[in-house]
Length: 485
Image 1 (tube, helix red, strand yellow):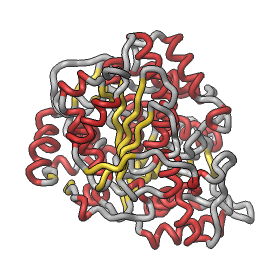
Image 2 (cartoon, rainbow, N blue to C red):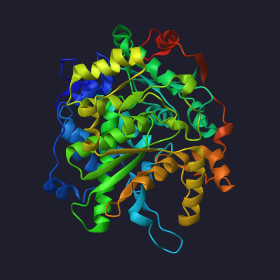
Image 3 (cartoon, helix red, strand yellow):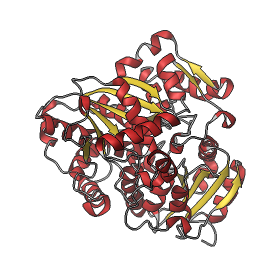
Image 4 (spheres, rainbow, N blue to C red):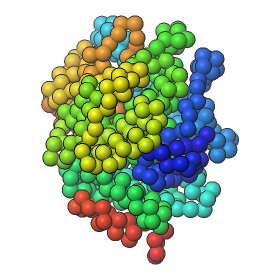
């Protein structure tokens, strides 16, 4: 399996190279040169596998430059009950009302938030930490990870990388735009290899800095810069697994070997739902991929109109589902590349010069007509919708959900088909967004053991302006492998 850039850069790369690199040299994102195809016989063979062994089977289709026995050991070390709280790793949570009746049209939650930082990002980030450590040891190299977070990626990455040999993490977050719990998870870490930078701006400013630094190839190579954002293919690949795991849980419950399933995915940067797109391209029977946005509805606008219109910082709303306060969806380029028949030149024109010049683009009618072929639908949720959905879900089913999952559930109900089960991807536990839960339910959300008083811990963070040059100076001074370090 080789990997190519969405913008047509001609050199094909191996998995281990792109694992450490992040963006392609031409600014594009890596994708496999083909999607392995899964048939009914393969699905039948995988049906009874543990999550770790299912992950090995899927990952090994895309990774052929890590010995199979090493890859199997890595995934078995990653996906354990001790780390994720259950053997299922991502268990299905049917919505059953207090009288014992299931939610209409087979709506259920796919619980992805039982890892160390209580968010779905842990499922991929824990694997990424082990992969990085393995590959760096194999090469005798170091890596300085540069990332941007709107809330959950940062803590998941830092918890996965803390104490890892040969790795430092520089995590950018928008100053004052994360919940107090999210800030505490990141800023309370005292590990020497963790560096938190609070940027004056919004998430898109942080993400732009990551892309600017990663685009400086001389600096990137000199300081061994890598990424953990979902622009890193390895992270997105890890997320493909739980779409298969969710489908297997549904089909076991329905005793069907070919039951199609739809997924509703709270979406900001398009990475989570892009993993579903990859699973569908592989042949997993996915009927719909429902993209749920909040008031920052760039993606919903695209799937309704064919127009992708990036907003600036002043027009990016600060909402009660802050991890989705994103107006420039990096992973969206991967889907558009596939939508355009993998035309790298056309993709580069849209996301390179076109995006910089016009702040967006509009697909040709024939191009936009193909969107439905890929199973996508979308919808938008507001603060009032979130509050109402959290209240109703708690009242009817006795389940408390976080505001992002509420966005997903609200939009999911607009796209139900009685014949097709709908799985809503849970994104985080409610404790991470206590203020919204208090507003909705009039009480504090349940706090998992080990997180008592986290907001009061000392914080270690540096506030900086939205300036790529300043971030580069900080990295140069503190990078692992720098002189004196």
